[in-house]
Image: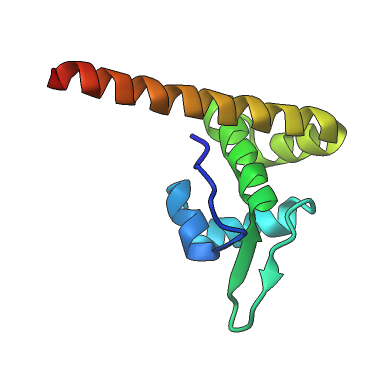
Length: 111
């Protein structure tokens, strides 16, 4: 699932919670995926931008939904950056449609 983004930067803990990961996963992904470029804020803290969060969503999707390994996901994303952006847009649209459908269903049940 792609989270709705409303801030410019997200703490590493917030990003981990969005994707049900732990922060050590994200630190590992940061090393593996050179496209991720969080701001370092001292004491091991990271601030991820909206673009970083979208990329993490794509990595998470490739690994969990499509059964890639992290190495496979890295190769896939580094092979075609345009394609990875398109996938993020598609995932965001699907997440939005899903949330709208859930709202409609809840409203129908309440009536």
